[in-house]
Image (tube, rainbow, N blue to C red; front, side, top):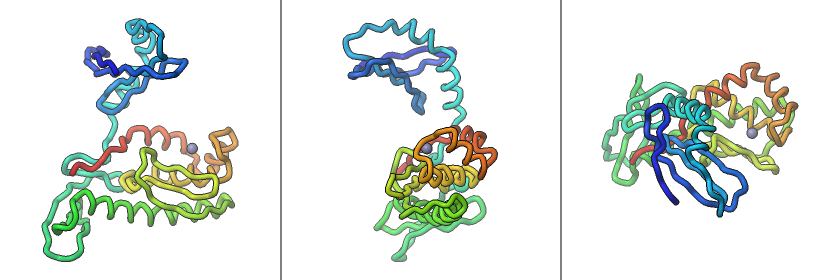
Length: 228
Ligand SMILES: [Zn+2]
């Protein structure tokens, strides 16, 4: 892997080059922002020309990423789309937990658990409760059956399997409810259309007319991790 900086809009962006058994060149912009380029093996590439060709795309992506909202910052988190301050309160009690008051998340900790563990427990439980109820409602409307709804540690917002299990990222409850609803509907609808075909989109619009707008908004959030 080779690294070099690339200049876009007067800003230096770190860039990583990877060689893989691919036929085409892939560019991926990750939060940071960091540019990753996957190149075919044994092929010389004129990087200057490549950047020139992709300049507009890169500028657009960099703008998107710099405006994106992280779910977790050092001492704040998003909960149902709103920012909350995180305050850690040591406790002697056996049970740890979270209490929300106004715009503060009070995290009660004993020596058995970390802040991160307590927050994940709390958010995963909230996500599960919310998505289970929504999935049930959407499934009834669409007329599909599913086996289980569960939360998971995943890089995606959610996914489902062909045998009818739906998984949601435990972080979902950090998003505004309108976006959680979109994600839940998206996955439940996949039990009927296992693709993103025009029929899938048409039916999506039947339940959420503004689903495209929600899809766009969802891209402005970054699925990141809680700091220790
Ligand atoms: Zn999908």
